[in-house]
Length: 432
Image (cartoon, rainbow, N blue to C red; front, side, top):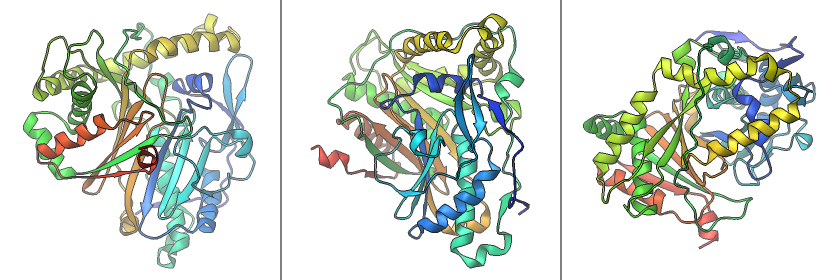
C-alpha cells in the first residue's frame, strides 16, 4: 500500500479559523458538559506506554487539526499553532470523556490514554468529528505497532496514502445563500432518573453480529442505521414511557457525515444532525410501527439538498457582515440561548461512524474499536456505533443508573435472532 513520509514535517500554518460547527463548542463547554468524545482501539497485547508516547510525538506534527491551541479573539475564537511537546500519554484513571483542561495538557485539546490492551483518543469536539479523529487514531496506532513489532518496520515513519491532512472548512465551501432557519424547539421526552455523580457515568458495550443485524434489517426493509435508531426509540417508548401516549416526541439526533455528499476530505468537523421523531399519540404501538415511522423520518431528511439546507443557515450567519462585527461576548450570549432552546428538542444522540477500515498489514494486531459519547444538556443516555470486521459495537453511555432501556434494546435484538454479547464498566455494580 502506498505511503508518504512524515519524519521532519513542519507546518507553516500559524493560525486558522474554527469550522462553522466548532464555533459553538467553546461557548457551551463546562466541567459537566465536556463536549469530549472517545474513540478507542483494542489491540491483542498490552500497551507499552513509552512506545505509545514515542508514536504520538512522531505523528502529531503532521496533523495541524490536532497540533493547535484555542485562542479567544475580539470577534471569534481561533486556533493557533501549538509548539509545545505532545501531551503526556497516561494510564486511564478516570471515567471516559471527562473535561479536557488545556492548561494541564500542554494546551492541547485532546488526550491519549491507555488501559491494558486499549488505546483511547479523547477529543474536544471543537477540533474535529469522529471521522477526522479516526484518521489520527489509525495513524497513531500504525506508528505504535511499527515500534512494537520489528517485522512492521519496513515503512517506519510513513502515513497511509489515503490519510487526508486537509483542513478546509467544507461548510463554507459548500453552503448556499438561500438557506432558511432550521432550528426545532418542540420539547422532547427527557430520560430522567437517579443519576451517577457528575464524574461518573455508565458504559455498556453490545457486540453485535454484523451478518445477523444485516439480515434482520433487510427483512424489515430498513438500513442497519435505521434499525438501530428505531430499536433505541422503541426501547425508550416501551421501558420509559410504558407504551403510553405522550404529548412530547421521542427524538434522536443522528449525525450525518457530509464528506461523501460533497466530495470532501477535510479533517475538520463536517457533519450535520438530522432528527428521528416518534410521537406516541395512541396506546400500544408495535415495534414494526415505530420502526417504520423512524425509518421514513430519516429517509426524508438524508439527501444532499436537505443536508445542504441544514448547515447553510449557520454559515450564512457567520458570513453576515453585521453579525461578524458583533463582539464575541455578545455572540456567545446568542449562541448559548439558541443551544438551550434546541437542547430541549432531543432525547438522545446516536452516532454511527460506520465501518472502520484498517490497512491490511495491521489487521492481525487489532481486536476492535469503540465509540463513546459524553453527556450533554437534556440528554442522559446516548449511543455510539462503529463496525470492525464482522462485529458491530453499539456503546451506550448514560448519566442515569437505571438500565432498562439498554436491556430492552439488546433483548429485542436477541428476540429477533441477532447474536449479542454485552459488557459494562464497573459503575453499575458500584452503585447497586
